[in-house]
Length: 381
Image (cartoon, rainbow, N blue to C red):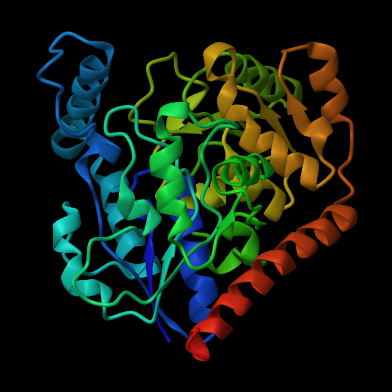
């Protein structure tokens, strides 16, 4: 079967690339031909177009910041890091087709597939600069009959959806042939919009059980290290990571983040996605505020702590907390920095046998959903 996937496969974000890899790889391992439809709208990475009706606004300032970062990374960024991301997209994701930036360019490709899948990550979170992009709901204006269209584990990013998007998002989701989402909070949103509860499935990273073939060595000054993967903010997570590294007498490394506007956490390193996995897999301890940092720590059986984002960013914590609750790992989450709590976590062993059983149960739910959808394509439903 020929399957087309639309997701954030192009983002220079480690988690985005691993979820994309895992979903495609699962289809490939089932004997199917799966490709990423190479849709790369400029607003995702570079903010998109300025709002000329409001030249001086918070949105325009954010867009300007994103454009400056994109320019800096393109022309002055770390070449090895840039090459590493490109290599991963080419060799691990199989992205070889020409970049598409406009929905109008998609029409000629859609009839080539027997199944279209809008994949995981926060593709259903409305962009603060762009709003709702129908492409990420597989909602196309097409002159040809479209193949079966389903979602696999998309996320809204938060536990609620702004009321201004309810009608548009509800209509977009309603035209899908099969609906699944990643978090229970996402199920709540869809149920509120459509009156029916969708299937809740795990992030694609949980579909795979073995990431060892992906790992590539990264040279470090010190083999004994704590790995800190921080997004959006240094607040709380920086203090926790530094405290754990000090207790363990270990070096502290954190990967380069082009959007970092905070003081460095330990020493910045520049791993490609495969080397990022190496740094995580060899760490004495992982400290993260990222969903995929948490998910891959669990899959690689690493001692870890998930530190909640603080203040107005705390709305993004729902995804991590949902995953930890499903796996009985709620105690690995820290919202308020407290030395005693962190010290207790460091001395608390994780029952990996119990966690593995729960991971297998989640994996089975995802696999059953996908197999069911594939079967319906096969019989022409």
